[in-house]
Length: 270
View 1 (spheres, helix red, strand yellow):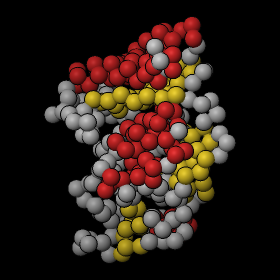
View 2: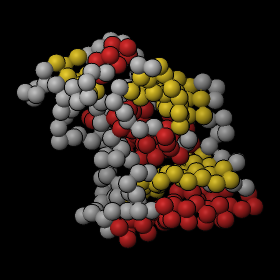
View 3: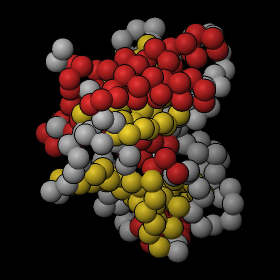
View 4: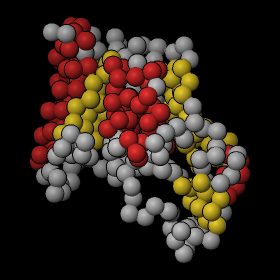
């Protein structure tokens, strides 16, 4: 264990975990296993708070809602039938893309959400496209908010992600990468139902781009065109060794269209 760590805590309750994390700024940080192994496994704080004893490992399928505990391992998501049934399997597929199986047994849903900026983005994109809701707990209590509005903050912990399945959404994922299992250069996840279409894109801006529009049989092409235009307009890519800014912007439009067309049942069966 690194020399800077003076205390390694594994609290059994959320209240105890939050009390430890409420220390002075920079003194304590949670250990949240991510799908991409960081250069430094432990946070650079004197106190490390291991969250794996907290009761947030579950998958609960209610009549119209799927609830996922933040500590649920990614491999559990891959193996679960209720997860596989969501939106033509995009949630299961994105969890499988997050990491090799060995790391999926360690990495958690919270780790995939927290680490999406530097790691595989597909699982976060799938949740954003599904318009998921996050439950966040702090010393002040629990709060529910749209996942797209969630940002990691000191003294607060992601507890649960919930997905409303009442509209029976369809979905599709499109991505480009150097190899099939490499981190995506650009990725897009589309979700459609009878009322609307929503797209989430990573790799074309510092933060995921989310756009949505009303959907009707008479205007499928117009809806797709509108979402492609919205994504391209919001694109502000930064090029790197994997793809230039121009390439990323172009792929954002191409993959948005591809994902949407594949997610629309009429298009998929044509």
